[in-house]
Image (tube, rainbow, N blue to C red; front, side):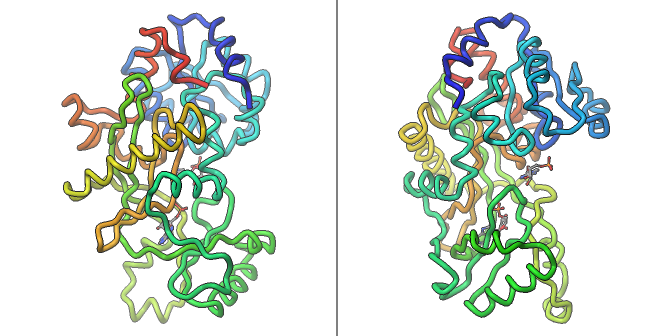
Length: 361
Ligand code: AMP
Ligand code: AMP
């Protein structure tokens, strides 16, 4: 892990009046960059030439940093270019996927918004379970192996595959039959199979809850909620049941988009309690904890319990549903507020108070 002092040493050499907010062009970069501009920052996007179009058309980036391929973002010359523009990087899902978690932790020496040490806690299922379970949140029951399957389960595989290869099943026989089918189709490898993660299938409505923890104000804010739009499951549910059986299609859960949602108001105490608990536990486990945006992906069952099946320890893709503000983020000030602008406000306040060490790593 790059020591905090080293990052602070780099930041000390910056021109603090000319900070540029930078991220990779994908995932949630539109509102990260737009939000930064609204708060008066310069912005830059890292992109390949063929992916630059949205940033040009929407005009959210003042500068373009071109790479031949996204994996080049960790190269020393790019890092130097970033430091020369007094960059603070806002890491998102694609940034971490393309830079590589090891590089983010050990070689990417550019100041980054949030706690870079916590990113591994969302990437590794055991750490994630330790944090979510340790916070006292309700999480799906985990099975030790296929032989223990005694009811509906969801089978997942490691890596940033965006739901590809996941399947529901209800028995040991069905597990091995589906594994065989997916292997034959080339969706899964033998190595994947040995790493299968089997958990209780939660039947419920999907709420992906976007929080922002402000280390400067020591408060957890509810910024918005989305639900997922996944292929092929969301197309499959439009096929009438009798035809579904005829078609014999296995669903997949590949994220393709998101919808904004609001949650029953009487569930909001539970929503805030979950965010508060996670922030408190993260402070204990990964000092200084969960700084800035994070997301709890949950399913609400008919006992009105929010069961958390996944966490993002950084800005989550579902925040794109409120680039122009959400019903919740709007309540704080009466103004539309995106997650990107909320991040920029925290950076701006930290600069004004001379407390940037509280928000970067
Ligand atoms: P993930 O990649 O973990 O976000 O999961 C992809 C999708 O699989 C989710 O958006 C849900 O639709 C579904 N899913 C994940 N875990 C469960 C579970 N334990 N029970 C039911 N559905 C799940
Ligand atoms: P991309 O740059 O779109 O290929 O995305 C890189 C990673 O971010 C993938 O692992 C995706 O699963 C994840 N991702 C992208 N968009 C979203 C989204 N809207 N919601 C959740 N995850 C996303």
